[in-house]
Image 1: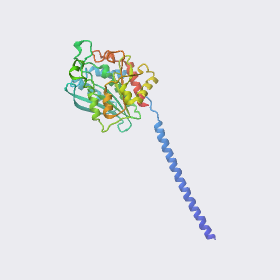
Image 2: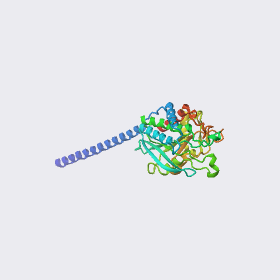
Image 3: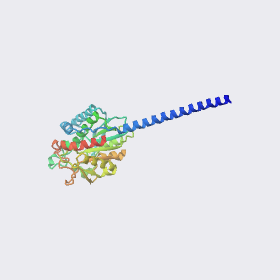
Image 4: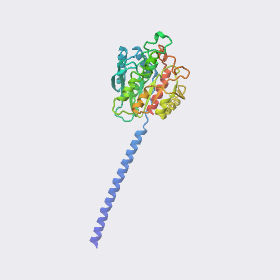
Length: 340
């Protein structure tokens, strides 16, 4: 009986050791899992401070573009400004692709266009798209003086202001990365649509050529983004931005988020809580081909004949139509949205 009892006792000890060993393993696994979950939660919870948008810098970048002269494809000013924009984006730390293409205008003229694509944190699959057009209109077809209507415009507000804002946003991203990857695309050949004096012959065609080309030939195969924000005419003094119809259709939730953010930041006098009609702009091409929820922040003036400011497509679109206060309202709102 003693030997049997000893064997029984020894077996109990072995069994108990195995039980304690298994329990120990489970405790370690659970602890590791909990620590891993805590780490993930902590990583997600780490706040990223929203940078301060510098309106003086944005104004400087706008003036630098205008100083080249009208940025019309097939001109020396267009080439020089394109190089400037690409080099500035590289200087801010972005990976830059210059997507060149030969495009056809409304009257079948061949133009050499270039989309400028700047990517921050390209390895992050969670992406946000910011965009604007950098070309200026070849015709001042809405100018009150008929002698000006075949002349190219400076496009200080209609083109350069939005790119100036995006350059300042890019500079801030280079200093402090948000949690998402950011792609900034400066589309070319947006503003070569049929002028008023040729409408009867050609019809209203030829707009948004650069964005149409990129949307069909993205710089990354099957490119997509969580959402997109297009800036257009975002620098005029006292400009107001309504909730554009296509934006509401494509990205209604993001429109509300942007407008709510502007209100929270004190810019409610710029971002009006009212809707306006649809505007044919680069965001239409982006959604058409890439199905990215994208919204357009674009000046709208319900009291004007065309829905835009009196400067629109005239020789009067000069640096006089660029306001640091408006640039600040738009730029700070966009920074707030992408960093939140």
